[in-house]
Image (cartoon, rainbow, N blue to C red; front, side, top):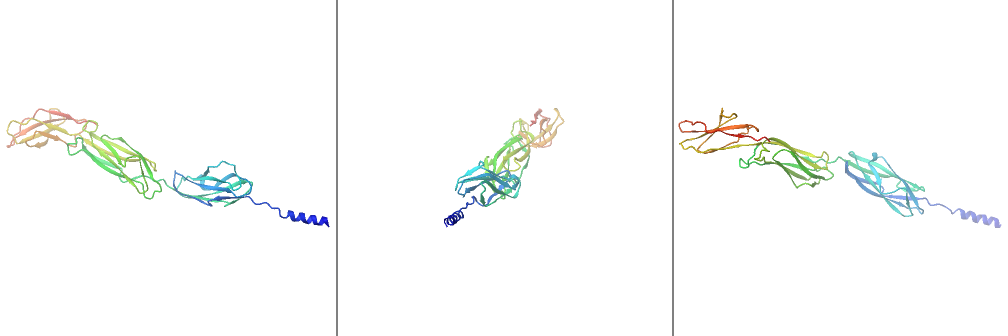
Length: 325
């Protein structure tokens, strides 16, 4: 009778023995890293918690899908977690192409644990890197005289830069560099560096003011390179123009009674000459002919004429050489 009672007690005792399953959680249960420009990246954190009553180690973090555009960091494996302990994992989305992209994350643990959720969906959208736009990028100034006193010399034009409203990120203009071109200056408003949010714009002003110095007469071309962090940098604004050099002539007034003066020009000393102007009772003339060729020497003479059509002999010849840029 005693033997039977002991066995019953033993059986009753062993029937209550059981082992609790090891468990872990990951929050949030899914991760959307948003719309990111290609070539850029965005990161968010996941929290892993050991909800077991014993220590559990995370031995591997597995990301499948996404062609390597989703990566993890911020944790050294294996990572042992005491009961109720947590750790964070940083997930980074670095799209190289546009469009919706996805992957999934799972954990490997020791001892084996039931992870909730078993797989964490990762998602994000790659957006093509925005490009800085310009309304006009090729300016032709034509002929501009190189003396501010003659017709006004400086001409300015304005190009408008813009970050398209459809962009998902700002574009920073880091600098504007002018190359080539004599007599040009380039400025922006606001001054670089500056940042344009989607839908914002700025202006770049190119001014052509050829100097009376020999360095800016004649045709020249140049460009302004707008360096920025958008696609297709630098954006280039080109320009060209011709600095027109004029010749100022002056002479002593005739002591005779005259009606006016004729002005002549030639390309050979001593003539022949071609009449290029008729002036009244003045003693100066500006030869602002746009066809004057840089590097060419021109020869000038003046005559006086009276009211009956009579004309004097040529004055003493003077010459002027048009500067080469």
